Length: 191
Image 1 (cartoon, one colour):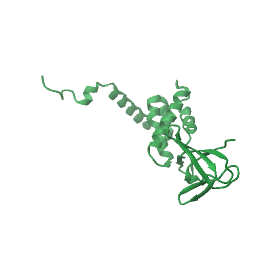
Image 2: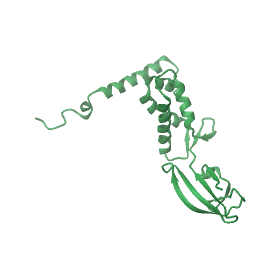
Image 3: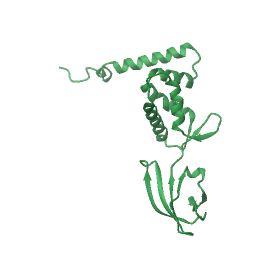
Image 4: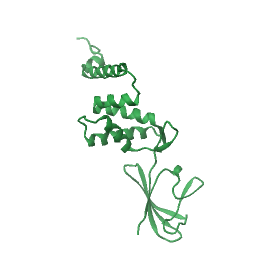
């Protein structure tokens, strides 16, 4: 019989005691803490570690999957685990009535999670999650971006919308311009 644990961060405290910086895993069968790691492998493209363990007391084997937990610090001071589902549900509301499919929302949430994890910290303010959503959402659908930005940035007047629309138009005009103009036409040899 095999038994598998899915652990969060070491700071959250998996079942077991911490001794000299090492996590002591409890056997799920006899609850003994003397368990030996037999095999350790990265899974999910390095996002988690799978460990095969053997209990030194009862001899049974079990598997643990350890993955770091990314915590989001809310404005209220409460922390909660990062959730792609929450990203998708928030963006879905902004995309209501727009030609954006579920697959595109999942890809956006994946990009946001990658961007947030790339910061290398275990805890990130919710404000930074919102910032990480804005870029990919702008690329996905400008109307949905405006809706999301208006709530996220607390637009309070029509001028806020006008400024954001003007910024979008400037960015679109910059993309449509000849790339050689931005690189400095005429910078090559005279001829």
